[in-house]
Amino acid sequence: MDVFEAINTTRAMRRLKPDPVDDELIWKVLEAAIRAPSGGNLQPWSFMVIRDAETKRKIGEWYLEAWNATYGRIKDTVTADAQGTRMYSSADHLAQHLAEVPVFIIGVVRTGGAGTSSSGSYIFPAIQNLMLAARGLGLGTTLTTLHRAHEADVKELLGVPEGWETACLIPMGWPKGKFGMGARRPVEEVTHWEKWGETKSRDGKAGS
Ligand SMILES: Cc1cc2nc3c(=O)[nH]c(=O)nc-3n(C[C@H](O)[C@H](O)[C@H](O)COP(=O)(O)O)c2cc1C
Image 1: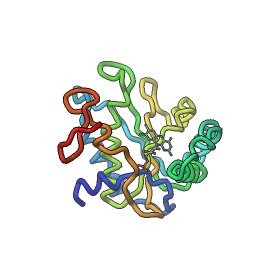
Image 2 (image 1 turned 90 degrees about the vertical axis):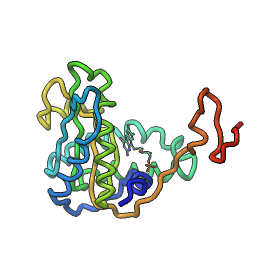
Image 3 (image 1 turned 135 degrees about the vertical axis):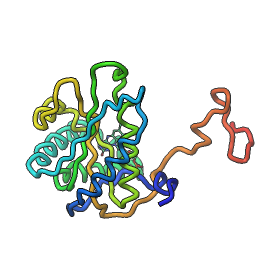
Image 4 (image 1 turned 30 degrees about the vertical axis):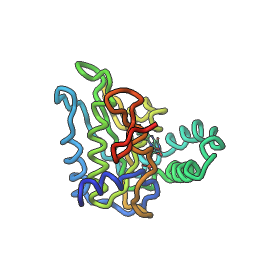
């Protein structure tokens, strides 16, 4: 698949089939993940592959609790427009069915030591690589973080040692729906040329 097609059609795929994912494909997405850059090439990352039903059930419970405690309360605000309603409904579906997703990949990052103060920036390039590789293989993913409301419990359950923290949980599986482009603010709107506030359109005309 062309790299731009992969980038343009990698979006949060939260409705996933329970069908298993071969080890070979899991190796492939992880091999893409570890090609990512990191400050000083420290690579302070680890990845946990979770397929055990009981482990997924437990994490799924914690995730749902965090979902209800946060987004459950602001449902009316989030669903004010059609796009928000779609996102809410798909995120709610994932929260209700997380344990049924065949594979969780948990990104774990080292928190102590040189260059790890902004830990997210050290692992998220790898996670984006992983999600793009999954897209290339036809596998759906979503970057999620809600499990972190139960960080201590998750770490204990998985045996994650001190000095490491879970940065994200990527549910991965075969999508029920189709891949497509997510809604984004246009480049023209988010790009400033030379000086803040100086925007232009693609044909070179100055913006407002
Ligand atoms: C740092 C971060 C945390 C996120 N946490 C969650 C989460 O906990 N649960 C979830 O369903 N989606 C989560 N998302 C996914 C976003 O909601 C999603 O990327 C965004 O709505 C764009 O979706 P789209 O690519 O389908 O357009 C997270 C994304 C990022 C970058």
